[in-house]
Length: 202
Image (cartoon, rainbow, N blue to C red):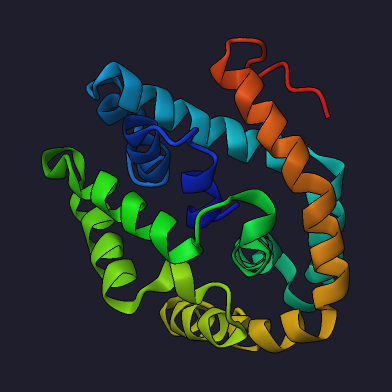
């Protein structure tokens, strides 16, 4: 899952949201120094990644995408799934997507001292280009993937990702809608202390 899903799965809690956002940007030593609730958000981020990586439905999506994009398939599927969430947003949340993103950005900006430079750069980019809302459009996915393709050290083919998504959207959406409610329930169980990294039923 990518940034939008991680934020949405944070139980509407500002500190969990911040930690969940920081999950890709902080190492263990940095995580241990965070306030307890923010640290729990980082742990939630890693639980989401572990659950997703080990679940049969995203695995099936990645297997298909890998035929076209090789080792970059997991990166693309994360972004494709965020597109699916954004494009079907009202299935999973009563608030307009733009309202949720505004709240999320305010929450992330509330503790600037906790945000490392790499996370700050992404946050500035996402806010300036309204990326999290733009995810719902194929043009937004193309914009993101074109940039990632330029920054990739090897030939990733990610510049063709939006065209692939457009051609295979029905099957990818089907996978996403089958998986996301399971992930939501797993996250709630994790936050309630009912499951752990090692114990996450599928």
